[in-house]
Each structure stands twice: as structure tokens, then as C-alpha cells.
Length: 224
Image 1 (tube, one colour):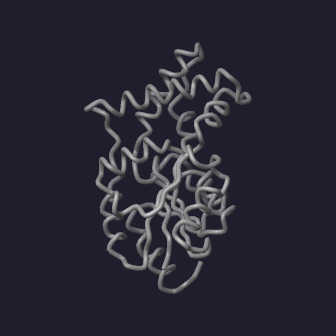
Image 2: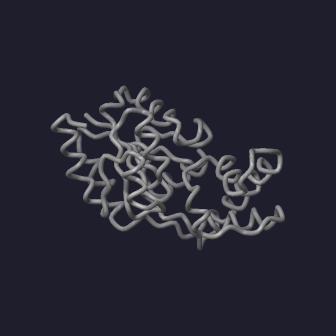
């Protein structure tokens, strides 16, 4: 039995456009120059307070916390719009449904999203029965702290050595290493594949279905 924990933004869902648009509005309102798309992508996966502080190169303070609230407002407003486009990466939906059919695999999500944001996404794509465990930025310290992973392990009764973390960010790989799990990086998200390998990825894949033989080997060979 294995627990497979996916990051969300940049791994399953391509949400960079919505995240960046929310950042642009938030920065402009606060009187700051709007960030580049690459700058926004570099902090996706972190909790909002840490992400904003890092983008502004300062400590978390009252203005940062105010910007967190405004970002959430803009993000929720955009995601409520009918034209909000946050697609699955090609093959991501099919991969999840292939994995959910394997008896020895449990699926979960560990994300820098809010609980409300993740729950809305899971409901939108009718994944309530597929996702067994999840942790968000509302419940745990920011990645690369291992709490999200370790709490999902405890909830499902799985040991970290029986767990695979899949993500597109350096923070995901560092979190996996810190938790003592297998770390698998994906190249189609928001980080450079070499950076993922340097951060401790045991594997880096270029296509969602390259994950199947890796997961299969870990499930049935009992290897890390």
C-alpha cells in the first residue's frame, strides 16, 4: 500500500494565470510595482504571507497581512467568474482516474491553496471520493515544512517511507525530503527540472503517465 500525495497548482492544475492576475491586482492596490509572471511562479506553493514577503523582499508585517486578505478577495472573485480557466494539465485528469482504480494506492493533496480553494476545486472536478487526505495552507506551516505530508500520513495510517510526494516546485521536493518520503518532480509546472533534482527529487518526469511505472514499482516492489 502507498500514499500518493500531489501538489495542486503547477502539478495537477495550471492556475498560474489566475494566481498572477490576483497578484497584479493586490500589488497595484498596495502601491507596489506589479510582479512579472516569472516572479509570481517562483513563489507558487508557499503560503501567501511568506510568498508576498519574499516577492517584496521584506519580513511579514501588517501590510503583508493586509495584502493576503486582498489577494484572497481577488482570487475568490476571479474563480467565481464563469470564464475563470484553471485546466488540468494534459493527462492529469486521466492519471488520477487511473490511480484511483488501483487498490493499493491512496490519493491525497498537499497544497499552498486555502482550504476553501482546494475544496471548491475538488468539488468542481468531482474528486471527493478520490482524494482520501489533504492539507492546505490554512492548516499547516508553509512548505518546505513537512507537516502537510506527515499529517496526511498520520490520517491514513501510512508511514512516510510508504508515501510518494509529487510536485513541480523546489519547495515540494524539500518538503518530501524533510518528511522522509519519495520525492517525484514534474517538469511541466513552474520550476526548472534541474532545480527539482538539486532539491532532492528521486525522479523527475516529463509526462503524467511516466508516473505510473514509478508508482507501480514503489507499490509492488516495496522500494523507495
